[in-house]
Every structure is written in structure tokens, then in C-alpha cells.
Length: 128
Length: 289
Image (cartoon, rainbow over all chains, first blue to last red; front, top):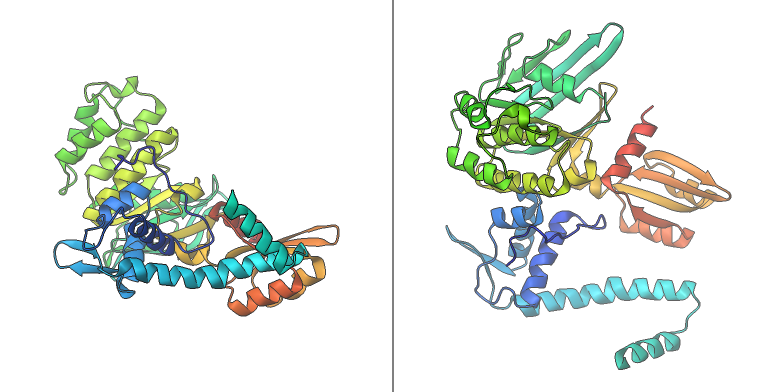
């Protein structure tokens, strides 16, 4: 991993930062930066790398522990659960449906696009 | 949570003007605080009073439950001033050696690592350093002292973006491994947003707001839409600032929004945007007077 000097994630204002911390870790599980039963970054490393308060990192990790995505090994640190990936995918599919799609439809309504128009656009994009 | 520092009804007058007016502040153990305010808001006066450099006209300060005597310096506290006024003729390493005497938790290994991180030559004389570099010397003292109460007054003033980032990184990493109470006064508000857990916002010597950073982030919004729609949406909500344009209206609000609110906004054709802390701060100050 890079030393972190050039790396910078900007945290947007739309969600609490601890939620964004959880999202970063989830992304890294999905893209296999961390695999099953591998250890994730320590709180101090995470905090230093992304320049956020350690208490916020702890809160974000806590969220994933509650969801069974991470588990704690006493005295060692946080590890990725064996079924973390399908768990994350299920949750994100749910979010994709409830948030992304409903926002998309709301905007489409404003633009007076029909469902068929949207389907055609999706098909077009898939082809490209 | 135990309270490390508690200020009650601090008043400081210079002639007829109040630098601080009935200011209350409570700092808990092992939390990073941001102290925000414009220039002249009273940040430095407050810090100077806590560190015993100047006297309050009124009010009390308690450090770990014990009342602080007039002009006394709190125990195990490190105060990094904006203007260090270090001995110009001394070498950097001598200044660090001097500071180390006052701090029982001083860590020399860490201090040397910081000298490297900040690219400082320990044998240089203080008077040979630029303004920014001088504040880095103060920051090394603030960090390496590992005092249980550390106060930084504008620690990144005069530093370039690279050095500011290095400072924040070192601070966070060391704090994660050695938790302590840290107060950072700054006017670079958006930079401090992810770093501090809580903030005190002061203006004209009075406390405008004390809250968790996360709660502010999730309650500060800019509402935009038709004037009537915005007026009906913001009714009963805490509005910080409004601006009208034609038939439209902008309103900065400080209120937690629920699903019902968002549904209402959608029906009224109102857009809701999140405010950056910087924007929130300026609306709060404009609305406060």
C-alpha cells in the first residue's frame, strides 16, 4: 500500500463519516483487498491514512461487527468474516433498489422520460 | 467520562469590550476538540486564560476537579502558542531539550521522528527559521510532550498543504496509540471536520454552539425552492439564514431531517443539500447576530 502521502479520500457531507468508513472497508472486501479471515487495517493505521478521528473509525468498524461482516480476535485486531462478501452484496442490492433506483426514477419523472426510454438507455450503455 | 478541564462563566474585558463573555467549556478525557471562531472571536484569549498567561475578570477554571489558582499553569498541560516566542539564538534541539524538562511523558524517539517528518535540521537556530517552520517546532513540542491536556493555537497557520497533512496524520496516529485530550483552535474549518470529534464555536467572546461534529454534519442543510414551499417546509425548524432570489428562496437550517421531511420536500419540489462545516459556520455566525 502507498504511504498515504498522495492518497486522499474526500469524505462527502451526505452521510456520517463513520458510515463512509464502513463503506470503504466494504469496498475493500468486495474488491478483495481484504479476503476472508484476513486482518484489516488497525484503527491507528486507518485513522492516519485517511486523516479521520480514531473514534469515528471505531464507530464505523463497530457497524460492520454488528452486521457480522467483521469479527474481533482478542488482542490481535479485526478480521473479515467468511461470509462477508455475500452479506455486503445483499445489503448493497437492497440499497441499490431503494435509493439509487428511486432517485433515478424521480429524476426521470422530472425529465418526462418513460420507463421504456430508461430501459433503452440502460441497454445502450450496456452495449458501449 | 471524566472532565479534564472545565471553564465556568469566564469573562475577560479589555476596556469596555468583552474578549470573553460568560464562556463555559467542558473538555472530556481523551477527546479531540476543535475550537472554531473568526479572527478576534476570543480563541486566543480563552487559551491564554486557561494556560494562566492572562487573568479572567470573572469565572473559574477547574483542571481535573481542582480549581486553578490565578496565573497558575495547569498540571500536565502543553500549550502551543501561535507565536511561540522561542529564544531566537537557541538551536532547535536546545529548545526541544528545554521543553522536555517540563513534560513527564515526553518521548524523544517520537520527537526525532517528527523532526524528520517535518524536514527540520535540529542544529539550526530558531532565528534562521521561517514563520511556518517555527510553528512546526511548536507542534513537535505539542505532540512529543504527550501531555494529557494539549492546547494548540492555530497549529497549521503558515504551513503549506503538505506539512498540514503531515501534522494531522502524526497527530491522529499518535492520539490513536496514546489517547489524550487535545484542543485545536483554527479557522481552517473544513480541514478540522474529520479530525475533531467535537467542536466549540465561539464568536465575539460568546459560545455559539458546542456539539459533536457528526451531529452537525447530519443536521446542517441548505434548502432551495419556491419561496412559499421553502417557508412552509422550514416552519418549526431552526433556520440559521435565508436569502431570497426572485420567487425562490434559500434557507440554511440546523435540524435533523427524517423520512417524512424528505417526502414533504419531494412533494414541494424542494432540494435539500448538505452544508459543509465551513458554510454552516458562516451561516451560524451571520444568523447569530
